[in-house]
Image (cartoon, rainbow, N blue to C red):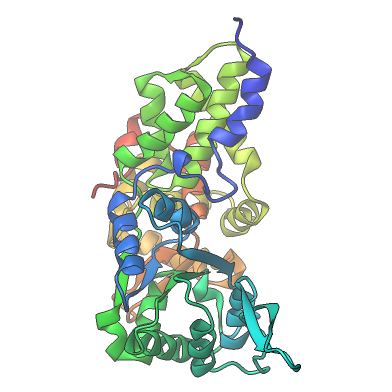
Length: 410
């Protein structure tokens, strides 16, 4: 039977999904250790969890497949509800959205000669006032005997100051009363510190699950699963290029994998090659999110001839940094010198990094520390990878500089 190359091009958008979090376990790759710890929190009475890590590392995808995983281990009785938090939310709004998703049946006695009951279907938010407090959540949980998991995604976007304290109080109360319910908060690293500061006693009932960048093996797993869905293969050098450019972020593995597959299929081939990947890089730059490309332009544009903004930003992107992504001024020296082909000293680029932390340069970096010991990191890891891919396409980053790119290991 001849290969239907056009259908495969369309199917590539399902096998590789850069824009949306993965919600099918069959397409999910890696994260077994992190997934195991989350399941431990859900199946262990009185336990809750917070998952945290850089944006773009796959936290939401992990949350999306929890229901399917629970079903696979024989816990299909667990109700999993996930909501997305936003900047307009507070404790009351977030819980109202969550509780509306759970419907239960209440029975009330009727008036008459023979005793009867009337059944009313309602959701768990019924009867709650405008302002919800932790005790209201306990009462709502007691209305049903079902085992429930509530996932609050992008929890760090809630800016209300009382929210952390109220969620911490709710977790402690659920644990103290032995209620069969688990809260899973999904956010960035700072969310953990803020939550624990609100109620230090919840540490014993809170499983903290850090989601690091993916390893080479995990990124390869994404490629393998996607290619298997399409009955396609890939050359080793093409695979290596996609993985190393992804720098531990599954978003770019999906994006480059999808575009490389489509380039290959347009040539009516089923084996992805390095030239296919190089073409995919160009398409990935074109398809990048508008906010990412806009921030890049704002950060690197200058009317001054011979400015170094593109090169310095690329050098920043090539530094691995610590576990939280922070790097020092000194770490920029080596990659910048390689990019420009001549030695550089800190004084020649320090002001560039300071400028990257301003609104005029789109605040692409943030800094911590005192005046003489500043550390920097990208505010958006997706932009960081865009800078690398853009540098490769613009030939600022050449084949002999591939060794500059850090490799993520367990």
